[in-house]
Length: 324
Image (tube, rainbow, N blue to C red):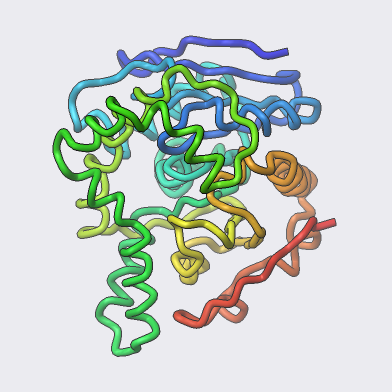
């Protein structure tokens, strides 16, 4: 059974949904751009028999409110929204967290700092680096004397061309208002291999207002990155056919995450929609292992340390199947 909630986050209304039995281990899902919570729906429905699954529309998306000021989309405010959701639906409870794309980017804020850090039992990050980690990664490679490292940085900059576009005033909003909202399902089908897509009546609105996330955060994070360390076990899921987030971006992640497990999958960026069964299985395996305290043994071959991390500029993909 699915339930709907309206949550107040310091004056901003957030729309949330929950699936499953509230007595089961809690798993919170955060969506990216230009999506809303419905991008997680196919995965959530498959996980509801085992977990209490919560997903919400981030501010500016879906049925949540749309603050007008750019400062209202900065990382601390987004982290406070996640706290409002879990405090309302999971009062006093620890929980597992999984996020995709921008949802993953913003969730690193809670995983590495703030009041939720001690309550997050595990984190699965899919196609979304911490901007602070990415800032250090980019700086290290751009000033390197290694041509391979410099090329890795330039390749990622080329893949992230849309971030520069989103900094422009008016134009991104006009594109979403005029045609992109209507054409988005066709794009996902032709480019990302998404065969079936639930109708999203707020798609144009999600894209139009979601650009504020990029405008509010990228410049200061990339220019002045902070030291950020995770405390919980982290599962990094890397789609090897991701057209936007390069696998090399995660070469240094072991520096920031003491307990890191990396699973490369043969998929594109929107694997949540193209292969929800794969993501549901990947999440369920990891969450169950952490619940049982067996992740170090069950995922030993996926563990990333300073000794097993990819050599910067020389990354080779490892396609991993189920852990068990």
